[in-house]
Length: 298
Image (tube, rainbow, N blue to C red; front, side, top):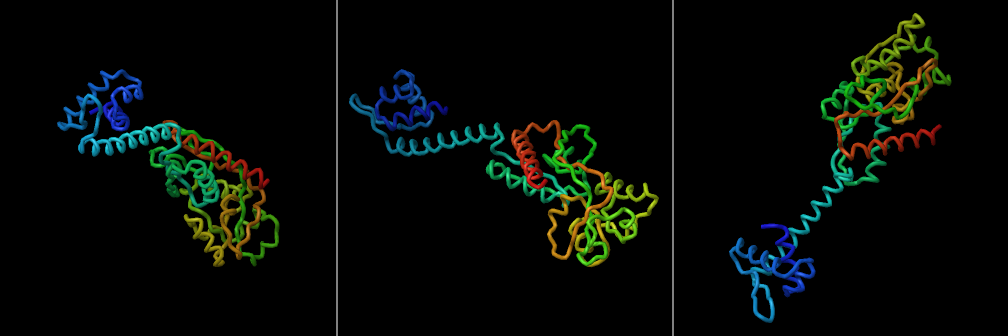
C-alpha cells in the first residue's frame, strides 16, 4: 500500500467521480483508476460501487476512507515535526550546571522556552564532573567556570565576574564595602573542595599565598547552598563568585567585594561533534539573554 493510493482514494471518496478526482490530483483518469484497483486487490475488498452513471462507497470504503484521512493527517504531522526538528524547533537538550550558576541557567531556560516551547529541556547537576559530562555526550551544553580544557569542545564566554565574600549581616566585617585579602585569611573560611573547581580554588587560595598568608579553611563543602547555610549558622565566611551571590537571597546574609579579586569568566561548553540545530538556537538565545541582562545591570 502506498501513500499515493491513499491520497487518490481520499480524493475519489470525496468527489465520487473519477474524472474530477483525477483532475484534483493532477493526473489523468487511467492511472488513478489503476491505483484504486490495485488498492482494492491488496485489501481484498471492494471499496466502491461502480456504475456507468455514478460511484458510491461501500461500507468497507466508508470505513477505510475515515482511517485513510487519519493516516494522511499523521503523515503530514510527522513531516512537519521532521522539518521543525531539522530547524531546531523541536527536540531535546540536556543542560549541565553547577549550583553557582543556577541564576544564569534559569534566565537562559526561561528565555529559550518562551521562544521554542516544543524543545524539551532537561537539567543535570555537573558538580564534581566539570566538562566531562559534555565530552561524554551526556550533557549537550554545560555552564562552566572558565578557563576549561577545550580539547574537542567549543567554549564561548558569556560574562566576566569577580569573587565576593558571604557573611552574616552582623559579622564584624559586614560594615566594610570590600574585604582585604589579609582580613579574609584570618577568618574561618568555608571553601569548596578543589576537585569541584580547581581553577577557582587555586585562585582563591593563591590570593593569600602570594601575600604569604595562609587561608584559614575550617571546612570544605561541595554544595553551595549547604555552604551558605553554614555561613548563616556562624561557622565562618565563604568566598564565591558574584553570579552565585545574585542567586542567593537571604535576609541574614550579606555579600562584600573581595579586594584584589581577578576577573573570572563564565561560559558555555559543548562538543564540536554535536550537530543538533536546537543546540545552536539555544546558544544564540543564552548569549543574547546573558549579555542583555549584564548590560541592564552594569
